[in-house]
Length: 221
Image (cartoon, rainbow, N blue to C red):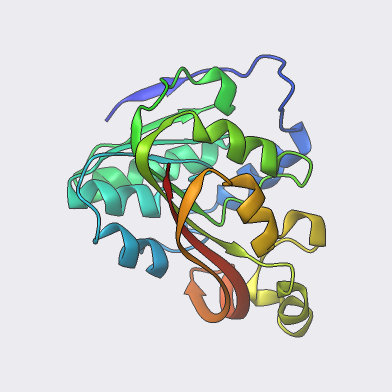
């Protein structure tokens, strides 16, 4: 398994130390915060695609990246959390696969234009002021005809979170997603699936119960 650590330099799009500390704290325990099994929607969609190169932004503890590697994908991932990276490498070793997982921010990681056949954004809730810019930056690394797979909490999720905080997700509406936002962020994509739906989550300690999500699969034009 390769380990490449690139320290972030000052950029227009930059995470705060508070954001980094939050995720390091969440991933510091021995247990996997969101479990070791892949997200159900990712699993469903990824098994329908031809195997190639895939990027996992904000990959956390690596459950989805490891699953893709088990299918034979060449897997690249990044996050800002050193603790998440450690857990991802543990999970990859346990499952006897290799994942190229870097620490840093997108602009500093050296990815090439049209490097990837697919990008998977699974509960990649970036800070509210950065999320659309990051989606648009990610676009350059996906080849024409490449696929984005997206699942994250919708703006209507707050009512479910108010009833059950164990379902997890951001507590501020600006960090949540709407169908219109996804259409705007991925305006140059053929929409294969775009829907808001209520699902039952059972992912580790932090995603448990009913929640409202946006699901999107798009093909870059």
